[in-house]
Amino acid sequence: MTTLIACSHGTRFEEGRTTIRALVEEVRALLPGVRVEQAFVDVEQPEVADVVARAAADGPAVVVPLLLSTGFHTEVDVARAARPFPHVVQAPPLGPHDLLAEVLASRLAEADAGAHEGDHVVLAAAGSSKPEAALDVEEVAVRLRRLISAPVSVGYAAGAEPRIPDAIAAARAAGAERVVAASYVLAPGFFADVVRDAGADVVTAPLGADRRVAEIVAERYRAGVAQLARA
Image 1 (cartoon, rainbow, N blue to C red):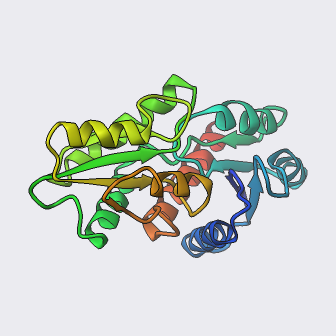
Image 2 (image 1 turned 90 degrees about the vertical axis):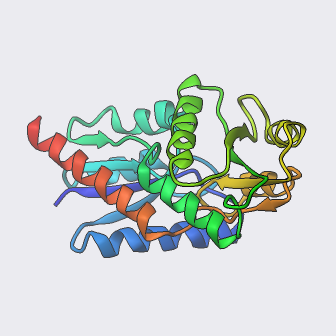
């Protein structure tokens, strides 16, 4: 059986750790019989390189980044961990994906936001200095626009422009009666707090341990297993 290594960023926030553990449990429920290991690129242990090396000693593995976009961690940390082992595949990050747009739309509905005249939604992402990450976020914004009636723009907590407070200010300057920050982060933690404090009128909850997010992880895993079978 091919091991699934669910690799998240890591956080010092206990609520965020609990959310990621719950997401991994959702993945286990979707993939009964599959060995699922957690790994991290920062802050928490065990480090992804150690988990990959241990799993690779037992057989093939697929590393699924529990990250929403391409960036330094996918291109460097995860890639470096997987590269030495021909029977280890690195899957793409979770986004962009239609199911992520669906979860965002659900979080907006839970906050009673994004469907009222005068609303403007800022898709509030963590951000990265990698241009590919911004392209991933913009693609999710495109998919979200298909699901809600409010206009959608993008803001970043770090690494790219515009920053979230600037995107919120631009929406107000353009005439928005209410600006909603759609938290495009996986779990509570540092970036979720940045989104919360950016000055929007309404802030949605993070994506969280949603079954649809777990379905993306399972999809990435199955694609990785198929890739290994073709090698």
